[in-house]
Length: 76
Image (cartoon, rainbow, N blue to C red; front, top):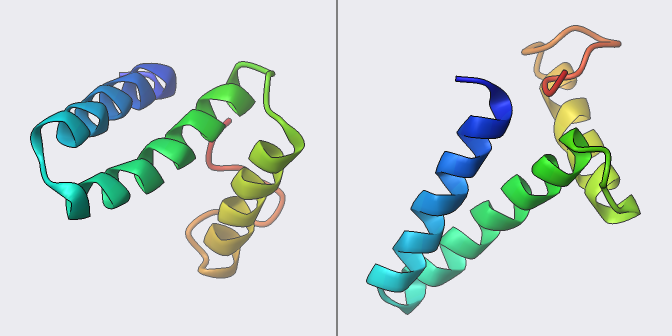
C-alpha cells in the first residue's frame, strides 16, 4: 500500500470513529485526522505553511530519535 492510500484509509477510519464513538473519542480522532490531512496536502504539493511546519517537526523528531537518518524524510 502506498502512503497516500494508507492516509486515505486512516482518514476514513478516524472519520467513522467520530461518527460512531463518544465525545472523548472525537478529540482523539480529530488530532489524528489533522496530522493525516496535513501530510496528504504536503504529499500532493498543496501544503500550507502550517502543514509544512507540522510535518517538518515530526520529521525532525524522528531524526533525533534515530528512526530516520539526518537529511532524509519519512514521507518521501
